[in-house]
Amino acid sequence: MLMFRERRPTHRTIEGWARSVLLEAGAIRECEQHGWMQDRADPHARDRALEIAREAPPAGVSAEAATSAIAEVLYSIGDTCPECLPQDRY
Image (tube, rainbow, N blue to C red; front, side):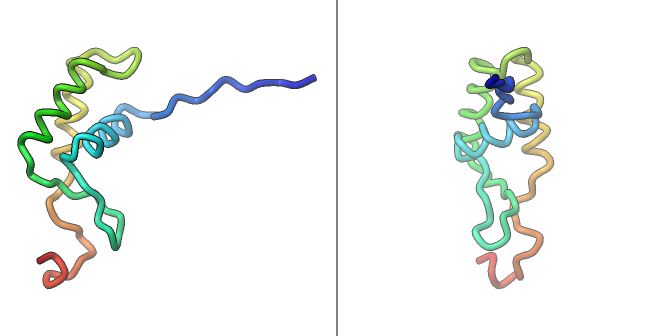
């Protein structure tokens, strides 16, 4: 008999969802060499990410919790890659 597993959610954590929203909005980017996330310091992109969080939070999560998750992820990401040498950053 063929058995089907229940489909896993696309994002397992609220932090993963927030990170994907920030990437989609262009508020953060990935270091091409090392893969670390970097804050782009773009206020318009941050506003777009927060708007997405308010209007389309993940299932079972309130809009307030979604916007809080966006803010927490942004706070945890720096604007430089910790592995890049200073001359590589410019």
